[in-house]
Image 1 (cartoon, one colour):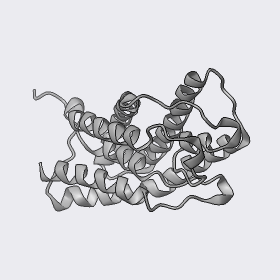
Image 2 (cartoon, rainbow, N blue to C red):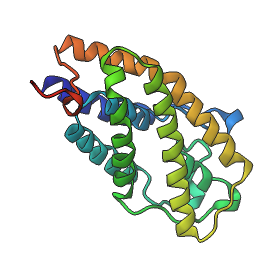
Image 3 (cartoon, rainbow, N blue to C red):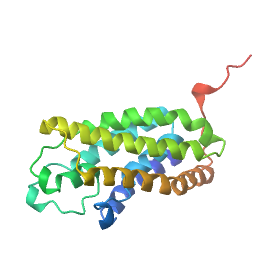
Image 4 (cartoon, helix red, strand yellow):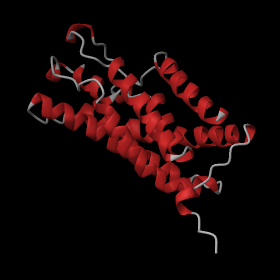
Length: 203
């Protein structure tokens, strides 16, 4: 229980740290999206019900943080693909996802990451890192496509592709460190990362 509460606190801390995370100007202000990355990392470690709780918290806070604002006050340092794209002149004054829409996206991708929990349980992080990178790429694509449906068009400027690739690579680069931190935290709190759905029934 303490491990799960600590995971929620770290997820909230990730949102705070994200506010001070700079973007990389050379990659159209792509950055390490800490709340998204930590959610995907936690999805590999926590049970399915807890993953859904984290998906709800992460999706709600993410949408609340990126509610529509006047285009003139949106800066180029916006940290996610969608808001960064909106900051481009050719896509200014576009719509935004309704509050809570991202919860479904996080829940679906978190469920996908639950499949690599056995690897993480055995201390292997190679496949989880690859899957976290895939989940990040899918999340960015899903958010952008939903924005495109609201706009009624799907422009794909060069900045979008650059930011999409850079954000995905940054997530894969930082994922091993966060996976090791979560694994060490589980050991510190004596929390066993079980895979109840994959255990063999007793004879």
